[in-house]
Image 1 (cartoon, rainbow, N blue to C red):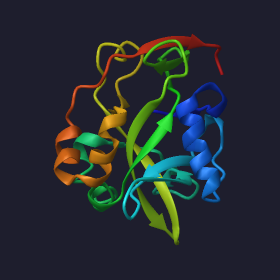
Image 2 (cartoon, rainbow, N blue to C red):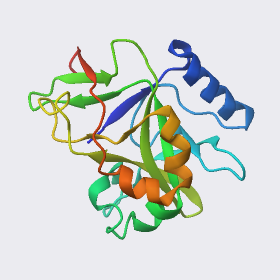
Image 3 (tube, helix red, strand yellow):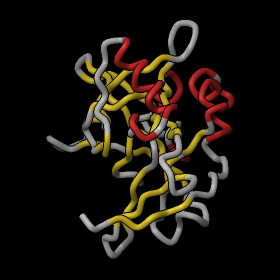
Length: 190
């Protein structure tokens, strides 16, 4: 599971460029700590190359007011809620790290190191009442995550973004990939 992530243009030149691309196209993504249902920056397919847009994080849930923010990558192709989206509308969440909580409710920030490095998370989106909404994919945790939580985001390298968005075969194979090792930093309790 991934319940929150960071999008910090002032801390990371690559995220600043992504943020500026969104602004240039008339979008205004939230910055800082991103919560479920926030309007966040996403990388999606364009006509000839990827582009940056914003959309709400979370599909409508089964109950009124509920949001589904994560989908298990291992079953996404079989689940009616996600199957068409993962086949036709894949996206990427540009982040500067994500948060997870252990069973004791201690909050941890994850990234490649202790700085606000760019971390890309695989996702998909769909239209609900004409409005695009997105979910990010999770997978089984690796050694760097398992002591904190039993799921982790499906993380892409920068060079895998185009393949994830445009190449169906790559996407189907990638969902079972081994995730990179990450560093965790304890954060003050919420």
